[in-house]
Image (tube, rainbow, N blue to C red; front, side, top):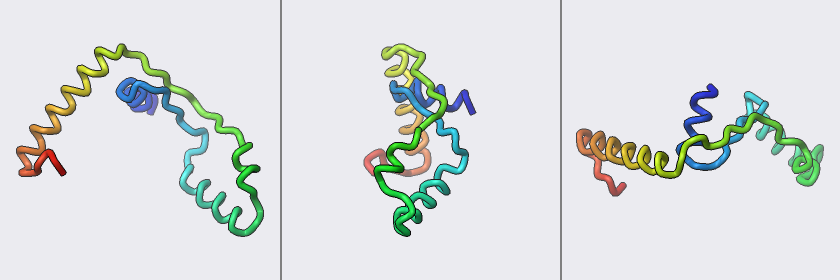
Length: 88
């Protein structure tokens, strides 16, 4: 979902890339199997493109910090209500 990807980029403050491959985990397993069987080389896999849509942060650092603080407060409230300590 584009909205989720944009929110993630906004909250972490870094560009977030969505891979073009929907089943990225399966592709990773196939690559590992191919490496093990000698069908691929690490260098060959590194040369493969990593195309995908990039979502750049679109909010200010001040707004990011404010939202992060609000999230931390909400997390603390939910943990205290569930009897979970904030330290682990």
